[in-house]
Every structure is written in C-alpha cells, then in structure tokens.
Image 1: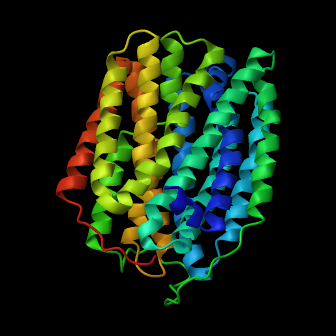
Image 2: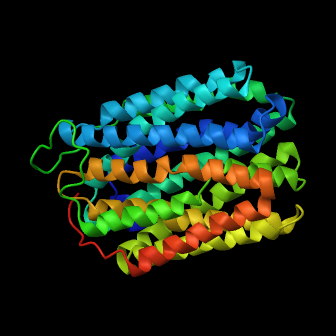
Length: 393
C-alpha cells in the first residue's frame, strides 16, 4: 500500500488536502447546525428537511452543468477554485441569520459552490491516474476529506467546551476555508486524452452505456433513502447526547472513514467495485434498522456511529471510481455530473419524506423507510447493473 501511495500524482494529494481543509471548515459547523436551526431559529424536523433537501438538490443541477462544461472546455481548475471560494464566503453569513428561511437561502448559496466544484474535481482525479488506480485515488481523496471531517468536529467541541458560542464558530471557520481556496490555486490542469469535443450544452445521455444508466437508477433508489445526515445528529441529541459532545460523535464517523477509505477503495481495484458497493449499502441498511430501535444514548450509539463510518469508507470512493469506469472517452465530466445530479437531486424528496415521517410517525418509521430503500438499491445493483470494462476516462 505504501508504494502505491507514493506513486500517486501530486495532483491527487493536492485535491485531497483541499478537501481536508474545506471539510474542516464545513464539519466544524455541521454538528451544531441542526441545534442552531432548531433551538435558536425555531425550525423542527420538517424545516430541517426542507433546508437540507433544497440546498443539496439544487446544487445537484449545477453539478451536471459544471461537468458538461469541463468536457467542453477541457479545464477543471476554474470551476474548482470558484466552487471552494463561494463556500468559504457563505459560511460566516450563517452567524448573522435571524430566521431559518434566511439559513435556507445561505445554505442554498453554499451548496451552489459545491455544485460548481464536485464534478470538475472528480474529473481531474479520473484523468490524473490510470484506470487500475482509480479506486485508490478516490479512496485517498475520501480519506483526506474525512480527516478534515474529524478535525472540524473536534475543533468545534474544544471551542464549545472553552466558552465559544455557536455563532462564533461560523467566523472561526473562515480560516480553514481560506486555506482550502489557496490550495486550489496551486492545482495544475493535467494532460487530457484527445477526444471529440461535445456540444456546448448536451443534456442528453446519448453515448452512455445501458449499464451506466442502470447504475444511476440504482444510485437513485439508494438516494431516496439517504436523507441528510443532520437527522442522525438530531436523533443523537434527542437520545440524550450532550450538545457539546454531538461533534465528537460525528468525528468518530469521519475517523473510521478516514482510516478505512483508502484501503477499502483500493481493494475495489483488484476485487471489483459492485460487490463492495453492495456490501456498503447493506451496512447502511443495518445501521438504519438499528437506529430505528435504539432508545437511549450510550456505548451502543457510539459503536453504531463508528459502524456508519465503515459504510462511508466502503462506498464513497468506490461509487466514484465506478462512475469513471463507465464514462465514455472524453465525457468523464458529464458522467460525474449525471451521477451527482441524480444522487443529489433526490436528497430533496429524501430529506422531506424523512422529516415528515419523523414528525408524523416518529423516528422508527423514518429510519426503517431509509433502510428499505437501501435494500432495494442493493437488489438493483447486483441483479440489474452490468460490469463495466476498464478504460481511460
């Protein structure tokens, strides 16, 4: 593993450390955001579902257009720089929000930044490494991303324990966000294989394989049950986890994912990606079933959240490597755009349905619904989606 890591191009590490600092800024706020929205601004589970669903779903449309733009211009760096810059500017504005509709608008703008950068970032990783190293490259990126998601909540906990207010955290997060933007300026465009230039705006899926389209259907089924992670933090708080310790619980998820992402994603380079993806989705279903019946905080809750980190490590890098495997030559950006669009836009109904079920019938029904969607997605992935042939993206 060490020799493989040393052979990875510098661009992979640079993109990874950019995500590390950006996630440190984002995840410093993420654990306290549901508390801030609910306790300070007066929004319940339904309002939380609306905020997160709209924010993530709308950004997904932009991911499709930015991916198409990368294929057209053969340049990913400008979109990456702009995307991280928008996020860095929007986060501190949450501190001055006076109501949850204002938070909705700010989160919407923040997610626009994610929409601008996600597909271009994944495209640049695809063209930087050979096909048989994609799992490792995306796994390293996810490992560094999750390392930032460990640092952020721990910083949040330390600051809250030492008297910082939730509002002050939004201003402190400016520092790692600014470092992330500076790192994007160091990224160099990789050499790309010559390919026919696609039309300026091509929203059709002509040229994509039937297997890729079926893969997107499976991803969509899973996404319907994959509501905002903020509901997990909300549930943890309801079960009795102290407000200052909620960030530590979320840090445990990211720590497990950071440690396991690279080795598990690299395993998919040798053993195949669909089986590992299916195992990860099954782990997700088991986690949500357990959360449906958990009735108190304690060691069991901590272990469950760590198990959730295993699910993340098994899927986050592998699902993107699989997209790269399916992508036609010269259209990796559009492939990632479609992937992010489908998986992201369904977060709106997923979060809304979960929030409504949570409010109307209680958390058990909501968590079991998500588990059922994951099981259906596993069936589609194993029985319906064909195996791609490895090729340059």
